[in-house]
Structures are given as C-alpha cells and as structure tokens.
Image 1 (cartoon, rainbow over the protein chains, first blue to last red):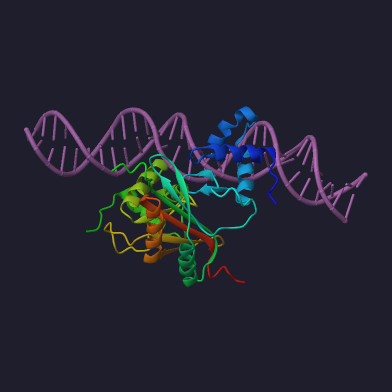
Image 2: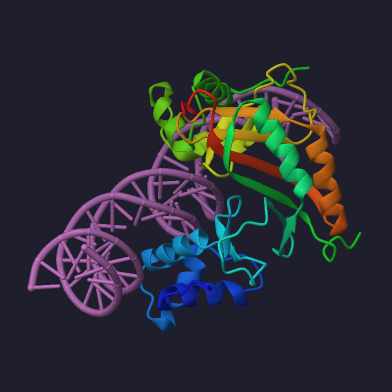
Length: 133
Length: 133
DNA sequence: ATGCCACACGTTATAGCATAACGCAATTGA
DNA sequence: TCAATTGCGTTATGCTATAACGTGTGGCAT
C-alpha cells in the first residue's frame, strides 16, 4: 500500500511535484516558509525519507532534487537504474530507463569484483527544445 | 605535447596523484598550507584547469576529485565515457571504460533528441577487498 | 620602448549546501 | 505504565564553492 506521509514530507513532495525542474533544499525551504518551515533540517529530513521511499531522486551534479517520474509505484520497487538527462539551458530533467545499460554496468562492475549498491547516471547537455540549431 | 602546468596546478595535481583516494578541495587546501596555500580559490582555480586539461576527474557524488588513471595522455583526447566505482568502505575509486555503455547512453539520449555534453557515471558499493563476506 | 592584453595569483568576503546536538511531543506496543 | 521509536523544531556549526577586487608578469603588435 501507499506509504503514509507526514505533513512535512507531503509539503516537500508537493513542492517538487509542482516544480518545473529540480529544486535545491534551500529553494524548497524558501517555498515552504509560508507553511511554517524555518530551518534547513526540516527540509533535509523530509527529503531523506522521500528518497528512502523512492518517491524522489537526488541529482548529484546539481545538489538538488526532483520528484520521481513514476508516481504510480509508491511501493519501494525499483525499475532498474535511472539515467537523467539534464538540460543546461532550461534546467529540465528527463528520467530515462534502459535495462541494457544496467546490464553492461553490472558486467563492468563484476569485472572488478565490485558489489554495486547504487548507481548514478547524469547526462548534462541540451534538450530538444533548447537545441535550436 | 604535454601541457605546461603552473606551480599551483602542479602542487594540486601532485596532492591528488599521491593520495590514496579522492580528495575534497578543502582537504587539498590543508595539505598544501605548508606550500603557501591560504585560500580555497587557489585550490579551485587549479582544479578547474586540471579538469579542463583532462588530468583529473570530479566525483559529483562525493564533491571531490581524483587524478585521472591514465597519466600518459596529457593531450586532451578522450577515451570515451568514464564510469567510477566508489567503495563506501575504503574510499577507493576505480576508473572504468566501456564503449558499449557509451553507445547505449547515446542511443538513450538520442531517443529524447538530447544533445550530450558530459556524462557522469558513479557506482557506489563495495570493492573486492571490502566485500569480506 | 609603449601600451595593451591575457593570465595566473593572492585576499577578503560571501553565498550555497548539509549535518550535529539538543530537547519536546506523539505513537506504539510489550 | 513504561520504554522505544519517530517526527518535529531550534540553534549552531561545518563543508563546499564563488564573487569581486587588486597585483604582477609575460607576450606582442604598434
């Protein structure tokens, strides 16, 4: 069943869901000041839980966060490795999945006898709209 | 021909080369205080250049830096996408390359009409030595 | 040589990201 | 009832990164 979120978690998730692109923790904080948020920790704690539930993603190369593009599975099941295409111009983020990538990365890691816990794939570039060549 | 480095750039590169694992900018700063470094910018400026020359890599998920594992090519030629295996236990970083991954990621991005500039692949997990099951 | 430009460097200050440590309140379950 | 857990709020602090200023030097065209 769907994870029951607390008030703060719901507020943070809503902020991310309704945002155009990724948001930093401090941007979220500013957006939620009217709802009683005062300190960064209130945001970070909610973010940690939402990450744990798989409802949001952290973009390492931006130090920011996006809502997961697959709102359906509030269960904690994975859909494999996620790759993010991040447009340097408009900031839009596209979530992509490909079983083949996962397979090849596993093979690569296996070759080094490395046990994978979590994989980050982020592609910086320019999206279709912003590539007005 | 090999890029001629400045004194600061050389110091920073040496620090990274001789380090066991990745170093943060501030860790590098501390290591170089005896050599006259006083401020973060001295480190960041050197890091920027070294990144530009392709002599070091930035690990987004750690906010830190490693010397490139291929010291030979001081020219700016790429060897395709680099994937990093980062051990959560010992901190060691292994640099990996695979043309197939690059190909699949290109295909993925192409499907979204996304123009790739730079790709980050970081795998967190446990290396062979630390997987003492 | 003069003037200009590009670049590395140094310093101070500030902005942006993240967590430590404390205490309180509500919930749960033995 | 009494712990144990969990979420919450606050203050303080630490880590990461850049802005903005000025200095000195080397190259180079005029």
